[in-house]
Structure formats: C-alpha cells, structure tokens
Image 1 (cartoon, one colour):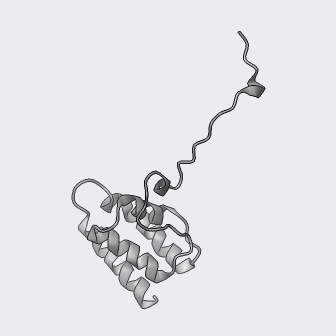
Image 2: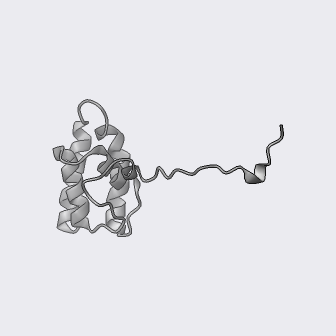
Image 3: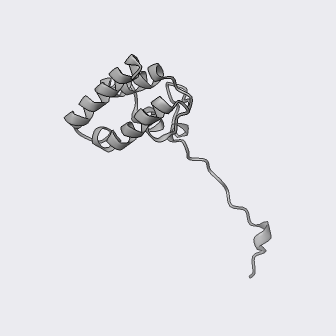
Length: 106
C-alpha cells in the first residue's frame, strides 16, 4: 500500500522554552533589567526558584547587553550549580558576585 505523502502531517509540539513544560511561578521575559536578573539568581541560590526558572534565565538571550553578559556567564556556571547534590562553592561565590555587580551598576 502506498501512502500519499502530501496528505501526511507531522504534529509539532513546542517544547521550548522549558518553562512551557510546567506552570512557572514567575512570568519569563527576555527584556530583564539588571535588578530582575539579580533577583532570579538570588532566588535560585536561596532555593526559592525552581530549576526551570533558572534554566530559562541562563539559556535565553537578554536584550540588555549588561544582563546578557552576566546571563552568559550564568549559563557557563549552570552545570556546576544546577545539578543533583551540592552546588560548587566557587560557582556559588561567583554568582553572588554577579548579583552584587548587577545591583551596583557595574
């Protein structure tokens, strides 16, 4: 039996960003100001944010160049902190420094 390929459709399921998988407590945005980015990092470090919110931030490009620079570094550090078990102490320290820099305007 031959199948007419012009009549076959492939369903598309949008799985990106990961925050679409579950209900997120915080609305995700790509135009964060430095204060908002600092708050996401703090929530993650304090255990108040889920790993989905963290992944959304770390993996999604930001419009503000300063926030984007720090977001890229967070993405590089993510495997050291967003994992089972203890977070890497040096990475946590660097993330805390990033929070301070975002708040101070550096």
